Length: 177
Image 1 (cartoon, rainbow, N blue to C red):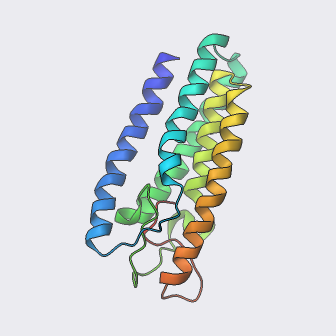
Image 2: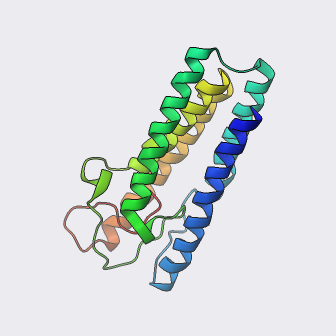
Image 3: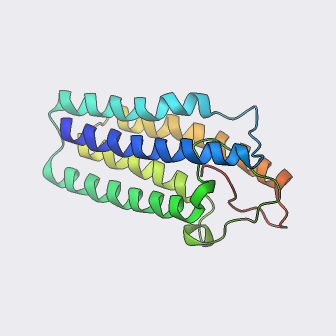
């Protein structure tokens, strides 16, 4: 469990550093952040969800080999999708909802086919860790609770994109998804 925790939180730290750098850049470009975003809750709930699953996994002494292998696969695919989204958005990827008015919408990478690939990846990360840790209680609770936050987050993003978008159809642009 310790090695898994190190991997999960190390990757989270890398993403956090990139997000902070991009947030500063977005604000310098005139990025607008909505007042009703759930970021404040998400920034606590996201690491807490992983911590809860790791603690439950330690108490349960880990997952059976097949569940562990499935969890590793789900987590790896989720991280790959997340980083594809991050790279596709480039400097526009942030943890916060920040929209720069007038900037062209991103329609490359996974955004060609998926509306919110980063959030799909986040749910995959949670599911992967739940499988790897045999977190049969905290895993489903974390996915359900964070899923509810993501529903609210998506609504905030969609509203921001609709008001700031120069294009006729909303898509990703300058937001953390």
